[in-house]
Length: 187
Image (cartoon, rainbow, N blue to C red; front, side):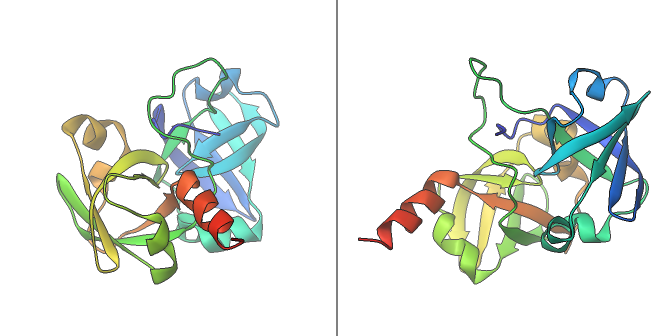
């Protein structure tokens, strides 16, 4: 479980045969082998680490459902270690389970992202959403798109400030909305 508060941006060193290798200064030193790391909003398991590197094995389901399908050397990735019991919850509950992909339709301090129709029941004005693992608040929903309003700090400290028009992003909708919708179908 994560909060969506990005701690560091790291660079893809390689992505071959389902093995993702990220370059990092000291980020992985306190993450044990087998520990979880949020990488662009996906909960991944650290399987190997070395000086300045973290290695992750991705299953085909993860590759197919996320932006990882088009990863390349040099891509920048948002990283977050898991929430610690007793720690602050500054963002919102983020599982690291990507629900679908979004397409950036407008950039800047107000960013418009379009999503597939099946995600819309879980996206509401003033609700929480994770975009590439970043905890954000939905400004408004129009048709099959939603707006997020960004502050300069978020633009600077995450990868979202470097996104361009038509770029694909990972979307995780609010966990409470998903559980509520699932519970309602049984009543």
